Image (cartoon, rainbow, N blue to C red; front, top):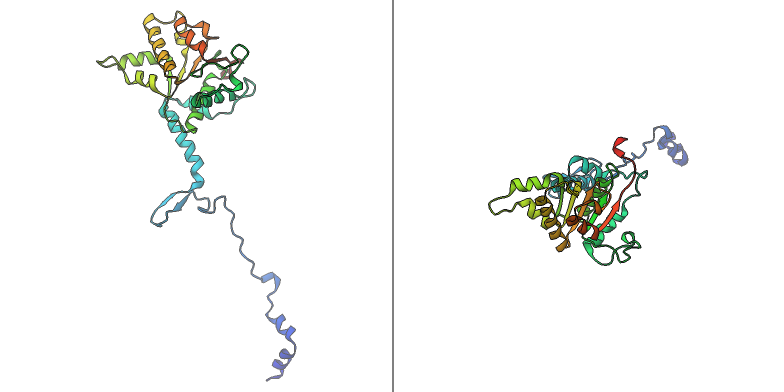
Length: 266
């Protein structure tokens, strides 16, 4: 053994100092990048089990659910403005957020006693559940409230929604009628689980011919008889502004007068 080797053998600390890596050049552990989703590493896609194809990651499901919800609202008849209203934030400067409207939807779908938010001193037992009428001037949130009801219905799993404008529906039905005197719109209006009728002010007292008023009265009668949920929007001040043939049916349901400035002016 050489002299140098003997010295290293006798001094173990000297050997350790020779092989110790200085702090400045020591290799540090690489920090793993942080991802919101570890499965797809925020790419939005991941391989299938057989690794032959890719599919959207579950982390993208909320966005896909929103797109699916919008497409179902569109298929039910809502226009772009009404769909935007369904997702818009409620403005507290107007009526309080319409939780009572969602309460009405849950009650009319499940039955039972009327919730406290729908009772008043005149009818402590609650109104008839088949109809919810929203009255008030333009821009106070009637359409937004109805759109939020439609959204809640779809989110709860409902698939039988019809949104229609009273202003044009009667004319469209007459155009579509076949030789048997019926149209698919008319049948749908009478059988859909939830129908939202916008702009019912078109059938206020003295605004329509007797034939059309009789037609609307018959459609509302069918829905009331079947206890089918119906939301009605009107710029009237209450049921008394309508022809008696329609007013009596609206008064039997739950109705509310929305107030406030016209938000469309802002």
